[in-house]
Image (cartoon, rainbow, N blue to C red; front, top):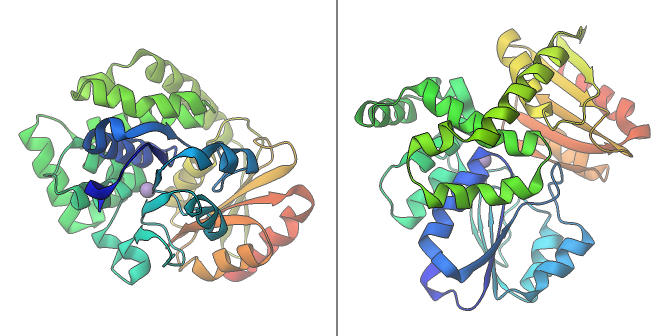
Length: 323
Ligand SMILES: [Mn+2]
């Protein structure tokens, strides 16, 4: 399939470490056939009208680690050949090449990241970038996945790295989106392509400076009190940093409880809502979409962008759902 791609290609990827590492792998494989790589406006799991227009000039578009709305994919497909590589929940789009084992009823534990799916599809051996995507999406939790935990340990041993080194690398890659810097996210795969050594990530000056700033903000937000309603931890934050998913993870993994976080500070007109649950989040994701929100997620995760006046009622529904 990839061999048949002709002309000028655009790569659209998620802004996190998994998206960046997947992009690096795909750009390495396709070389100068990819003339541009873009991430959506940070926080948007969709494309704006301007982006859709701007992206209509390419011969092919590859979308990685993002479940963009079906109608946006279909719009892009009017002018270009589309290939999607993803592991988020959603509906299969049969009109385009849609490589997502998770929506084809495969076990998500066997496909822990987009980077793994892409690397496997490309026929590459296990490498740093395939694994960084996994560590980025699962962090410490990957230790509960015997197959991949073994692979990671073997890789670390062979390459004189520790799991903590990998964890630090993904954290550094994630600083690009957490500080709200879209251009830096788009530059990151090029930085990885230019130098394949782990130290290229670990010693990156800007990413390390970001890291310090973000640690301070995370600590500040985590120290604010949470509420608990019917066994669900609820936290309201007001920050311009895109750290809602990191905050939600920290709280839910530490407590083992269902967690809902609301950030009122990222968008002017809308709130970010994030949930981590101990049960399958899919019905709630569908409900969010039904209500017309930008909403998506994975087995145990929901992320939504909600008009401010609808935040409370949606949060109440989530808490009811989790009860
Ligand atoms: Mn991912």
